[in-house]
Length: 221
Image 1: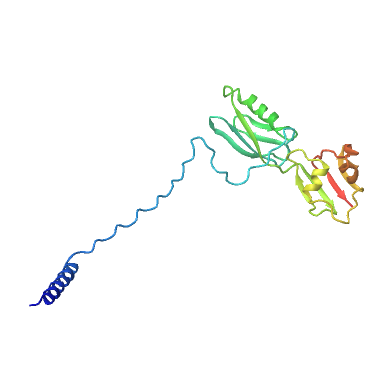
Image 2: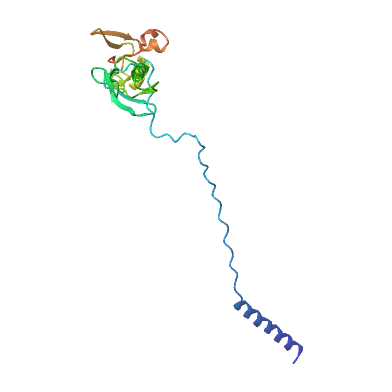
């Protein structure tokens, strides 16, 4: 056998051996990539306030005086049996366990709270009373005439004439801003109070920008 034939035979044998090895050797599997870590959501700190649900009730002015149909929530600290949601009756009174009727109409919230606490002290040492206004239904004023949103509005805080007109959506283009009137009932009689809108907004005649009372009617011609 010539040298060339010998070399060709060896090369062929090497190819056959390599092919056989490739068919019998297992192909290693690639390991899957590690999962991408997801950052953990931090837990709320202890004592943090919970997310607000719903809208908070509007705060009442401390000088607001209660009236019939106002809804109150009354509770006594550490006294589960002394918690009640009550409506001011047409006669102006409310009823509460242990003490019976309490006059509420014409009084502020703090005055009613103090009265309840004073009368409960006969039965409970140093009671801590809470009185909240849940709904204002008695003291309402009215805006009629050429405003964008005429209607009645509750007085649960300080409201003057300018604020009332804003609540009513402002004047329409055809309103007479100098002819606005506030009609108020005093001692059973209607009293007309003028309101010059342009003058007040210029900082003049500010005494006309009166604080509204329950039953007041603002007329915008």
